[in-house]
Each structure stands twice: as C-alpha cells, then as structure tokens.
Length: 492
Ligand SMILES: *[C@@H]1O[C@H](CO)[C@@H](O)[C@H](O)[C@H]1NC(C)=O
Ligand SMILES: *[C@@H]1O[C@H](CO)[C@@H](O)[C@H](O)[C@H]1NC(C)=O
Ligand SMILES: *[C@@H]1O[C@H](CO)[C@@H](O)[C@H](O)[C@H]1NC(C)=O
Ligand SMILES: *[C@@H]1O[C@H](CO)[C@@H](O)[C@H](O)[C@H]1NC(C)=O
Ligand SMILES: *[C@@H]1O[C@H](CO)[C@@H](O)[C@H](O)[C@H]1NC(C)=O
Ligand SMILES: *[C@@H]1O[C@H](CO)[C@@H](O)[C@H](O)[C@H]1NC(C)=O
Image (cartoon, rainbow, N blue to C red; front, side, top):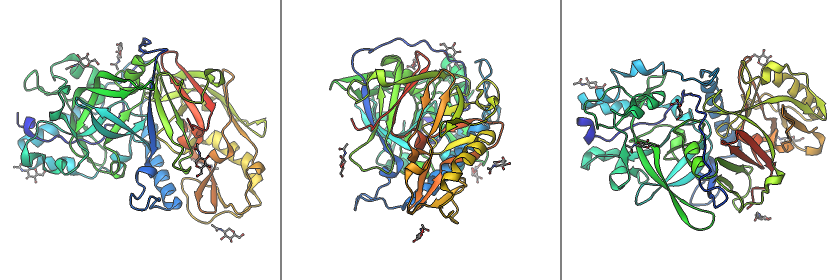
C-alpha cells in the first residue's frame, strides 16, 4: 500500500490505442449554448513576461517546431492501423508487469524512474496549442496542450501525499491538488473499466486490493517511463451564454512529475483524439456531438486568438452555411481524424499523384492534426507538389541555412504571394480546401521562407498540420462523422 502515500509521477501517455469506437452521440446541449476556450500557441505561453516580447527569434522557434514535428511524425507512422475497427491489444503491456510503479513502491529510491529524461516522450503525443481548463471541485485551473492525437487527458497532480513526500511537486505551483477536490474518484483496479477498457491506455494488471486505484505505466523505447493513476473528475466550463456547466466523470490521468520541453509551459494534455475515453468525445456527447477550433497565424498580433469550442458556435463569425463538409474517417488511423482526399491541384492543374497515397484503408491516407505544425506528404505526393511550386520561386536565391526537414528555403526579399500558384486539396466528396499562400510558403526566419511540406516516406500517412490549417475554422462533427471547414479570421 506504499503507493498510497507517494506522489505519482507520470508524464506522457503514448496512445497506441485504438478501437472502433463507433460511439453514438446524443445531442446534449444541442441548440443551446456551447463553450469556448482560448487556444494559446506554445510560443505565446513562452513569451517573456517581463517585456512581453518573444524571447526566442523566429528561426529558433521554427527549428523547435520542426524538431517536435519530426519526432511526432516518427511516432505516428509507427502506430499500428486498424483495418476494420477492432481493438489492438497493447503489445507493451507485458513489459510493464514487473517494472515501474510497483517497483517504485518496494524500493524507496525507485521514484527516480520518474525523473528520467523523457526527451522523446515529452515530444510525443503533444502539440502546439494550449487551453486553460477548470478541473475538480472547487475548480482548479490547469493549462493543457490541446492535441487531436491524444486520447487521455492528464495533468501534473498530487494525490494522497503528505509533507515531504510531495516535495518536488509542491514546488510546482500549478500542480493539480487531487486531495483538495471532492469529485476526484480513482478508477478501482478491480473494475472492468481498468481491466478491459483502459488496457488500451496501458493500465496495469496488478490489483493488491479491489478498490486500489487503476495505475498505468508506459515505458518508452529510450528507457524512460511514465506512471500514474486513472481517475474520474469534474470539469467546469463557462458557456458562451454566460452560464456555467459541469462535465462529470471525465477520465483524467493524475501525474506527479514530467520532463521535457513541452511541459515547461503546460501542466498536461487535453485529449482531443477519437476514442471512448477522450475528452473530445466525452465533451462532444454533452455539446451537440462536435467540437471545433479556429487557428490564427501563430505569428499574428496578440489581439486575435485561436479558440476551441465544444457545441454551438453562434458567437463566432462563422455561419454554418459557409462550411464545406467532407467525411471524417474515424477509428482507422486511431485516434487521429482522417479524411478522404483525392488529389492536389496547383494553379488549377491536378497533379499526377497515385490514388494509393490517399487511401485511408490501404497504406496511405491523410489525417488532420492539430499537434503537428508542418504538413507531411508522402513521397509520391511531395515530389509533384514541390516540382509544381518551385518554378514560381526560381528567381529567389536558395537559403544555405539548414531548416530540415524543410528542403526548399529561399531569401524572400522581394517576395510577393501573387507569384505563387494557388494550391487546392480536393476531397473525394467534392469539398475543396484552398489554404492561403502563407500556409504553404511559410516564414522560417527573418527574410527566409520555405515550402512548408515535408517529404515523408512511402508507404505512410500524410498529415495536414496546423500551419496549413491556420486562418480556417474546423468543425469535427463526431456524431455525423464529418469535417466542416471555412476560411475565417478567427477574430470573434
Ligand atoms: C468503445 O465503446 C463501445 C461502446 O460502448 C464498445 O463497444 C467498444 O468496445 C469500446 N472500445 C474500446 C476500445 O474500449
Ligand atoms: C533502488 O533503486 C535504485 C535505482 O534504481 C538502485 O540504485 C538501488 O540499488 C535500489 N535499492 C534497493 C534497496 O533495491
Ligand atoms: C467513471 O466514469 C465512467 C463513465 O465515464 C463510469 O462508467 C464509471 O463508473 C466511473 N467510475 C467511477 C469510479 O466513478
Ligand atoms: C489588432 O490590432 C491591430 C493593430 O495593432 C489592428 O490593426 C487590428 O484591427 C486588430 N485586430 C482585431 C481583430 O482587433
Ligand atoms: C537576402 O538578399 C538580400 C540582397 O538581395 C540581402 O540584403 C539579405 O541580407 C538576404 N537575406 C538573407 C536572410 O540572407
Ligand atoms: C523524398 O524522400 C525519398 C526517400 O524517402 C527520396 O527517395 C526522394 O528523393 C525524396 N524526394 C525529394 C524531392 O527530396
């Protein structure tokens, strides 16, 4: 029972999970109000509070983002795929059985396992946008990374901990104090929720006594590990009509410490992926079956901000008639949101890209991912896109700085967006996504722009990243399995 008096540590939950969730969503608050949360870009959170300006130059910020994206993509592309829905049994479960958390219990210094650096882990399953969320009763504010590639919502957390045993965590002002919340209910390890449903989220099999919390342990390939307990908690929202509402029994991971760049500014992750226990699916059930977001250019002034909405978006400048819709393919490249694309045109000419590249049910497919900044195209799509765009840029001197994984960068003195032909993503059901030029000829440093596509190995998944998504409103309608989008300034 020693774990009851210990601060739990865990950092990242890697979500290899899957599952045809096929959840049926009722329209809880449909037609009434929704809730709108500000989405804050990572770089805004890291702004120097003293002088209010970015402490890091564009070049370095972009390098960090590119690095993060590369790692994320690697993890994403090594994920197993679902053919027809079913569950993936978690292959790693057996390695967890005799390690981690319980070892930490029997070895007083075992807590060091949680202090291992988690470079790869910290960058995995995380994203670039943050939200403030009110968790517990009374509500405590936590700042979480909004990630459409994560299933579990977790926060840095103190649970059943006293005095010196909480040491390190108590120094972190923003840690969630589970002991102060009257609605924090750990999931019992004897429950079928722990034993069956959460097996996909790496719950542990050990269960010394039936009401002990359901613990989980994830080990990264680099030897680091994450440990924590699952709990149900209440989340409080301010509705767009000014009232407040509470969402009960939201699954959260309670984590005691974390390592890695992503968590300098954030307290954890809000899981917006598609799976039975993700926050997005739970909140969508309550608010009309959908969530949406609008991303401004992350380099734009502070007076416009991105936002995340659950439910109705009456209060925004978006009217439903402006939205184009395409089918949302759920549960195949789980927990990501996939779409059926059929091609890319540049300057009105459809490029010769083999159909397999777009086939979600084969070895290709495209996902819309809030957690990646860049857009990844598998090689048979990358090559023609770059070939079609390069001629318009041939008069600019190529940059000799290294912006890997971006390959084509140039000195943008004298650059004018009208020189670049318009790129359009075409969906099989007729929808067309036409991003602004600045979303694919992107700023990489002062005076340097790059073609914002990454060459990804084939076969593999292509990714529409958040730079490509910017200045658009995106509606993830889970209940109707469709993705709506419209161009927007995101200004209201
Ligand atoms: C998700 O929920 C549905 C319905 O409740 C269930 O049939 C399915 O097995 C669940 N999936 C997982 C991965 O637990
Ligand atoms: C406890 O774990 C630490 C680090 O893993 C190890 O160095 C130490 O020998 C262990 N102590 C005991 C009593 O097993
Ligand atoms: C946690 O919430 C789920 C519903 O999301 C519920 O089925 C389960 O019984 C709850 N468990 C506890 C311990 O409250
Ligand atoms: C933001 O501020 C700039 C000036 O700093 C102004 O031109 C612009 O209209 C403002 N945008 C909004 C949406 O208020
Ligand atoms: C781009 O080229 C101009 C001259 O054509 C030069 O003055 C400027 O320093 C160059 N910028 C970069 C970032 O290399
Ligand atoms: C893209 O990567 C593949 C290897 O994965 C390579 O063969 C190809 O030449 C690359 N294409 C470009 C344009 O760099």
